[in-house]
Amino acid sequence: MTAVFTDWLGSEPAAYAQKIIKACGLNEPPFCERQIADFLKIDIYEISPADIEGYRLFNPDFPSVESFINESCTFMGTGEEGGRVIYTPEIVSAARKRMNILHECGHAVLPWHDQYCYLCKDKDMDPGIRKQIEREAFLCASEFIMPRVYFVQDVLSLQSMSFAAIKILSKRYHASLEATANWFTYTHPGICSVLMIEPTNIDEPDCEEIEVIPAHQENLKVGAPAMFFKKLEPEGDPLKVKYAMRSRRFPEYIRSNTGIAKGSPIHQAWLHGKASRGEIPASTFGFLGKAPLQFECLSLGYRSRMLVLLWEEDRQNRLIYAGKELIA
Ligand SMILES: [Zn+2]
Image (tube, rainbow, N blue to C red):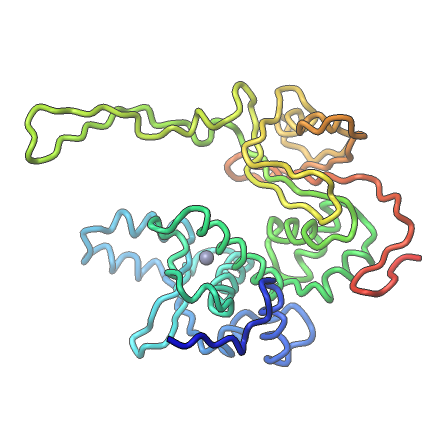
C-alpha cells in the first residue's frame, strides 16, 4: 500500500474547499454547486416522486427506504458507468439542495473521508467518528457556499449582530437561514454564539415494551423499553439546546441537551413565538460569575424549533483579522 500525501493541506476542511474554488476559477459568490460537482466529476441525480413511486412497486423494503428519502437524505453512490453520483431528493428548497450537494462534495474532497462509507446516516459507523466527519463535511460545504474571504467582509460591513443581518447574508449567498446563522457565528471575529432550541419532549421515549422471542426459544420473553432518551435529558425543563455554534472568542461551550428553564426569557419568547431581543443572565446556561448576555430569538416554524443568537459587547477596539487591521 502506498500513501499519497501530495493533496494534503492539513486538517482544516475549509482549506480543501478553497483549493477547489481556486481551481474552478470561481471568484464572485454565490458559486454554483453544479459547477463545483462538475469539476469534481460527480454527477447529480435528483430523486423524483416518480422514482419513489416506481421503487415502491418493486422493493419490499420500501418503508425504510422511503423514510430515508423523506428525511431529505442525500448520499453519494456509484452510477451505471462507474462514476460518482450524488443522489438527492428533488423536492426540497433550493438552499437545502445546494447544501446537500456541497456537503457530499465535501466528503469527496476531504482525503481522509475516503475510507468511510458515503451514506451519511450509516448506522454501523462509530457515532463519535460519524459526528466528526459530518461536521467536517458541513464546514467544507459552508466554505463552498459562504467563502470566508468574502463572507467575513460582508459580516463586518453590515455591522449588526442580528437575525436581520443573517437574513441579508442568507439571500446574498443562497444559503438557508440556519446554515447562515451557524456560519455567521463560527466565522465571526466578535463574541457570539447561536443555539438551536427545541422542546424537551421531542424525543419522548417510546414506552412500548418490545418482545424478543428468538425462533429457537419458546418461552423466554425479554421486555425492554425501546429507547432511553429521557434519562439523558434535563429534568423538568421545557426546552433544551439541540446544538450550539460559537465564535472563537465566545468564552463558553454550551453543550447539547443543556436545559432552558421555564419562565426564562428564551422560554417566554418560545411560548409567544415572536422574534424578541433583550438581555439574559449568563446563569441561564450555567455560566457563573459572568456579565449578562444579549440575545435575539427567531422561531423557525418547524418542529417548534427556535434559533437564539447570543453575544457579548465587544470591548476590543482594534480588530485584526487574517493579518489585516479591520477596525482601528
Ligand atoms: Zn455526510
